[in-house]
Length: 273
Image 1 (cartoon, helix red, strand yellow):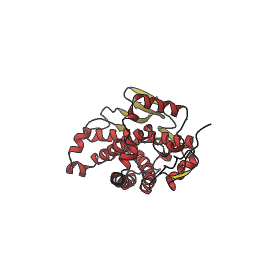
Image 2 (tube, rainbow, N blue to C red; image 1 turned 90 degrees about the vertical axis):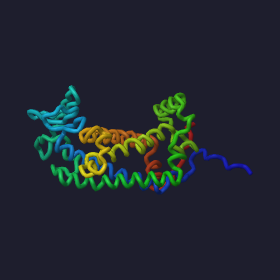
Image 3 (tube, rainbow, N blue to C red; image 1 turned 45 degrees about the vertical axis):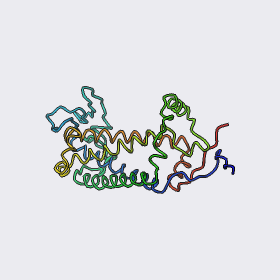
């Protein structure tokens, strides 16, 4: 019995499972709320430290502040003028000394208590979604079958070929477009098993109740301020991932890519002539 020929391009196929699509959109909404409410929480004390302690008099490795009507971002010994964006921004025709502007925060006006409610509520949405997706991926084999790279895919020559293909915007076509390429696999695995767990664990380490129940969390990050710094860094790494992800969606064909994540149906791109 002869095998049916592999799709060559133009065919509509099923690409994403329902569990993947649901997790994707729940995650997207949760991350937006978490980022914006987290920026409001950061505004309450816009300085980051390493270790267990941190206060205004302690040296911070990162600080966003204002002095004499000028906003600045200071990282270590390097300071950058950020007036109008960070430290000092315009609102209602006036300049406000605040680390992140109101349009980037939830709520838009200063309210630490409300920001914490938003943040904690959606933190549980993110954590529960991650746990459910991980369990479903283990049961249906998605993690090993679709995301784990093969030995040959990790060869330097193969990785370099994929980097060059992406730089030329030469995206996979036909049957190859149905599966993740190696760079996608590595990026998604970095988020799934690295960044998201680090975000959840560092968030838990900042909770006094969790510190009492699981003191090893503080040891994991070298103290509560270390956990806060890791939380901040991982948040911006996730933002960077989302920016690159959206750029790739736009370049690969936004209608087809978004449809595949809404309905699961994906039209395989035809190879360039």
